Image (cartoon, rainbow, N blue to C red; front, side):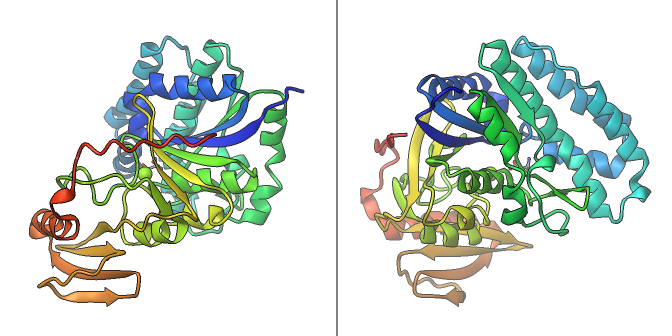
Length: 362
Ligand code: ASP
Ligand code: MG
């Protein structure tokens, strides 16, 4: 038995592994060398889940080929050989037998599963190639859910009983690489809703008593507003579970809305960017009470949420609680309004070159 000092769960999002595969591997290696037990949770490669959705619908050979090539090309790029024949055979079989499934959603969930199953195979093989013993794990054998196909909820009790598999691997000093997003209900495959790998990571963090759960993506952390749309956003270094929960329910892209519940008041969540490893946000009971602005697109409209700040706006308020206010705008004006509201709340002191950097002692 190899004695390890702490245990962490690290989740990498789809663009991380497609664009920063090397950095993701090195981060895992670093933790592992520093005597941490590491459980990796992976999304499908960026774009693959959307591709599979289309493939489930159209069943076209071209899309199947594209799906195959993305994975073979990535494997080649990183100098590993992966055998994906088994999975491809099963995928072809599923596409031909949609009618054998109890519902369209159950069928689509099975098709979705191949994205994560291939990404863990790829990542785990590369770790092995580098001398870090690792095993790809299909969460179908771990994560038990209810029967809400397409957006299933995890049954923590039942899932806990399956985790001995991971415990064994960790005890032997190996790195399990687990498929995010996937689950099982009555021997059928389920998924946890789009972006559901965050939820998988948080469930595993809770049930394995991890010291922390890292959510690594292509942005450094949680910002005062979506950094892709709003100018002069600031990173939020410390935010409470409750604030993060509200933000995720009101549309925060960085976090799946059911990911807070399992870890709340138990395991800290740390957000970071995979590329060159930057950790930016710690979700725990400590908060700096920095306001944040979220949005959700609903048809031709957008619902903007302002959390932790009061601001009066000339738009219809649709929800108001002590902690937040929501109002509606047209989708076309979303970007302008987000920038305007951000400007009003944060004024001129905003700076895009906020240097706050968080390296928690994990
Ligand atoms: N691959 C899934 C998605 O695209 C799950 C995830 O990325 O977390 O939604
Ligand atoms: Mg996500």
